[in-house]
Image: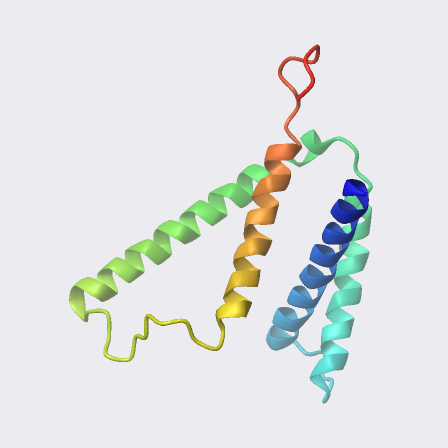
Amino acid sequence: MVDVACVSSQLGFCCVYYVFIGQNMALIYDFGFKDIYKAQVAWMMIAGIVFIPLVWVRKLAYFSITNGIALLVVMLSLLLMLGGDTYQIATVGIGPDINWTIGTQFLSFFGTCVYAFEGEELKALSKPNPNPNRKP
């Protein structure tokens, strides 16, 4: 039963990820479609063509260089955002229209947080057992 729950949650995360890619990439380039949904479907198909062969790779060590580059990009992005926000708060202040209450986008924010933490959970679960004689 637990395996069914894990597989169904992973399937849901994959579907959400494809829609996320389709929506965001369609905003960047829409292939000349007048209907934005056609551009989103086109980007989801392209993502499938790219991602499906990557899923078939069994040894994750092949991705060590690209994972290192991605980690570096994420860290630089976080530092850039932190520096920009610090500069903004120091020079201008927080701003008069900042609302610290739970708004209408709370469920979307909460879903994004769960989605982000799910990736961290997978990294923790995929680490090899340091003592193979003991069960985890």
